[in-house]
Length: 225
Image 1 (cartoon, rainbow, N blue to C red):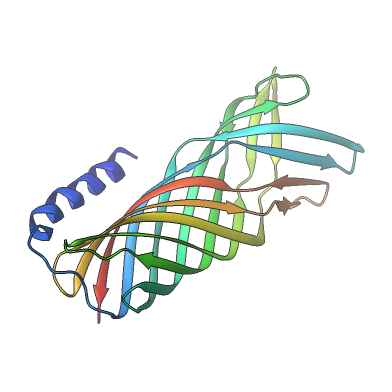
Image 2: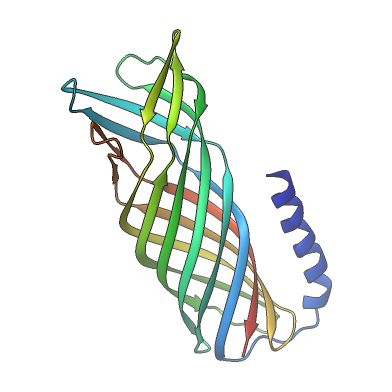
């Protein structure tokens, strides 16, 4: 995580002097690659154990994780339409029993999201090389839960089985497009990302409902053709 933040800061520092005299980018097709961090919000997991005929509810919290991806689309001047592929992953920080309030220890597991989005962003052009924008998109995400273990008392428990599920996803966001010249620019952006609840039942004995909701910050490099 420290390496990611250092890389983002370095890209911003290098780009600002070059952007101070650059002209805004022209309309046309473009591609973007980006790197950033994801900060997932805590989520509730509802688990049904078919073998013991029991249910449980836990609150899951995550550590910040990696956010990486790319997009390709067309800039119409006032609006950009694009397709985006991105990946987010975060380790599970804590699991708390909602019924009794007890907290599990020594958590080992993570949740990832591979998202395919169709986005529309509206550019607010002005007389500077810095163009604010806002917009959002819809699509779907393949959520992947690793085998997740935790300790309760003296017992090591298998909390969630490894599995994946594809669900509806959407995002909204805003940012700054900083022109380096008529062809290249730097993208400083924020995205709020959310999915429907995924169902994980990899061991066929239990099923857990979990969704991925996160705040995301990124630095991207855009090339116009």
